[in-house]
Length: 391
Image 1 (spheres, rainbow, N blue to C red):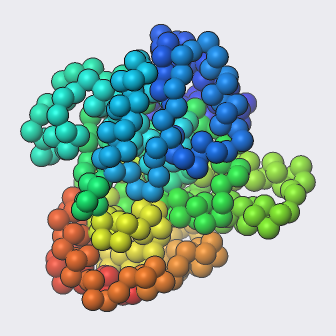
Image 2 (cartoon, helix red, strand yellow):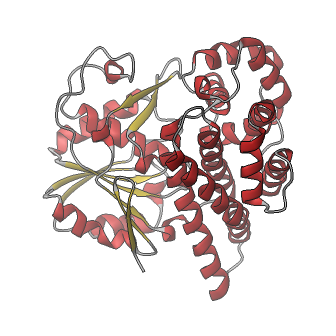
């Protein structure tokens, strides 16, 4: 069964939802579609079938996305857009192709450099039309498919810039858990911890937004119910096991749970994020670390720092994952146990981070725009302490 809900973009969720792509593009009045994806998704067996299903449209594929998305990928994508004479975009993949697709849409009709439109520091207004996007997520992490911003890094410095506009929100999301069944265990774990970090930091973020708080708590519950199962099924498939019908159904349900948790995290963090993300952005800038993996490794140390500032909120989250919890520390214990169970590295040292690079990491983290929303103020010495604890 395919379900429909709106937050605020229209989401069609359920196994097989991707089959509605032709109808959605037709309803939008599109004729010449640019499919934006990454080079790994483009090699998956179902991807040519998806493209072939669009036989009534003029289509072109841009698959020049990999790693943390950078400006040069956007520039190449805009060139593909112009060469095809496209009138809309289908974004297929995880957070990177979603963000590149949105940046291509922004630059399709806007002059200058992408970073001219940086949120809060723009030198140009976003005042031209932005072509429609249909999003088909293939990971459960960033939730970029339900977001109104795009995060792109500078090629040389790896510094992340955020471009924001409500028009960047995809018109419709086709959330099909079948497309996540082949996701490798390590990517499943890293993207899952990204979703969890979004949910936890959104719930802790300063400010009043009970709608986001409610969504965040339900999302945390879904992660607790499904992430470890998703990783376990991925490990079994990676070892060559053929799942029986019952296990396949359980795997599909777990992937669906995480797909919803991911979207809920991206919806909830309109309230704000926190210190974990500032640290993760520094790791991506200095070491080009995968964003979800960076969040997963930093989350325990960052939450240990935050516990004293919001004990009641930590207890509410702890009771979401374990109704018998009696202290906010129980949440930290659960995060640690989950991280171990799904294979998240235990320390920054396991990622190759050297203590003599702390100065560079702290310098970037201090300038990041996420930690001002953190429930506990984060000064320079605090960042040193958090990074040192994570080492």
